[in-house]
Amino acid sequence: MRNFILFIRRFFNLILFLALEIVCIILIARTNTLQGNDVMSSANALTGLLYKKQNDVVYYFDLRRMNDSLIAENAKLRARMAGIKSLDTLKDSLVKRPVKPNDSGHVVQYANYIYHTARVINNSISSANNYLTINRGTADGIGKGMAVISSTGAVGKVVNVSPHYASVLSVLSIKQQISAKLKEGNFGYVTWEGGRPDIMVLKDIPQYVKVKRGDSVYTTSYSFFPSDMLIGVIYKTELIKKNNLQLIYLQPSVNFRNLQYVYVVENTMTEERTRLEDSSKKHL
Amino acid sequence: MTVYIRNFLRFCAIMLIQVLILNKITLRWWSQPAGFPVFIPYLYPLFILLIPFEASVVVLLLLGFVTGITMDAFMNTGGIHACACVLIAYLRTNVLNALLPKNLSEYPNQSPSVKNMGWMPFLTYSGFLILLHHALFFTVELWSLNNIGYLILKIVASSITSLLFIIVYLLLFTRQNARA
Image (tube, rainbow over all chains, first blue to last red; front, side, top):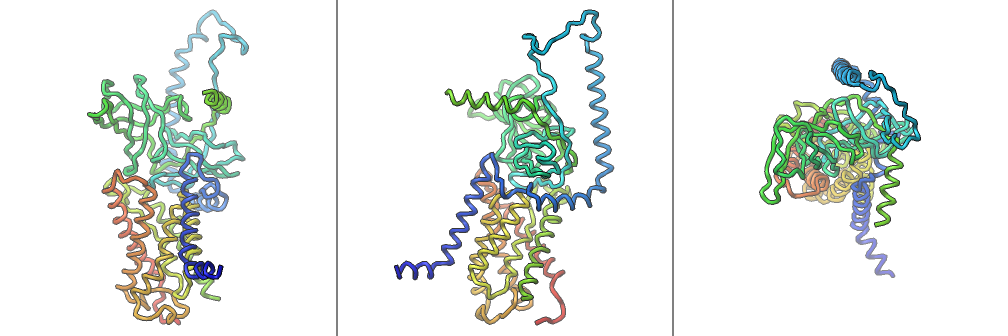
């Protein structure tokens, strides 16, 4: 016993060092799961408040560019709305068939998505896993796992929420893969490999699929994103000899360097869908 | 008593500089001439480097852990900063003993600084520990050796940038007139 105490006293520094490193490793391991780490995140009240105060100061310097992007988005939405209106044959036709909600033919569900606006109060592009902090939290109806988009394309996924702030894992993350598709309907997934924030990689596309520079890559309904959101534009392709697949490099459509306003997309059907998917996994 | 207050104020100042200014630098296009972020300045390990000489290893380890965890909370890294900080806090005493002619207890109430160590020893001391911190941090963060060239480039370039910012900090915040 005496020897044991002597041993502890002799190596106390080393033991404390190893203990603290083990605590760190546990924390890192907990963060690297996709569930994320609840305790240490920039969504907690103190860090969120500090980032918000800073953003309040620098906010005005970006107003001009922000107005430009808002007007561009308005123009885009107006053009799309005009397209929908001119094609609305149901309204123009003489025969109107009312569709009841309990009708078996009524399988299309509209308005699944609720869009919450949010302001980006902290941003990063230089880490291996980049996070944004936004100024909306559970008090505004934001929950874990919701998709975050901007006016130009897919941004990321909410991983931590507090009452008034949320932290978002952006698509510039080496641990996140996003289901993606080409315009012709070939499915693959998009990842980021660290390094330049304006290059992402689309994988799992077979070589017989002909892609051109300038083609668009969209999200699919398999992922948490709403389907057909623009992810990026292809600028280079590379064939892999080994397995008949090709690597497609794309430029994300979102400029992560100056992200100011984003939309958090709440899918009202998510709960039902995950419950169904989980229950079918159990039966396997 | 003033030693505690001075160190606490230094902790706040360094953290605010790191979080509010240095972390935003990489968002600017002129910070990335090659198009990708190779250098990310981390000034905050300087707090651990500037803890007074006579602090025991236990105190150093605990302070290093707290510093790292604070940084992790701001940057969503979940423990990587703390891991690297605890390592340099543990090795600090040994490095100082190797570099200084006198015993550490002969510097009562003083922090390591350019004045009582001289430029070259201080830069060796901080350069070595910063390089160690960055090497551990970026390796754990990237957690793959597929792209080892990029990893090494990032470690070296970031260390040099961090060291430059440390020199700037020391030039700005060291009192020029003689002080006890």
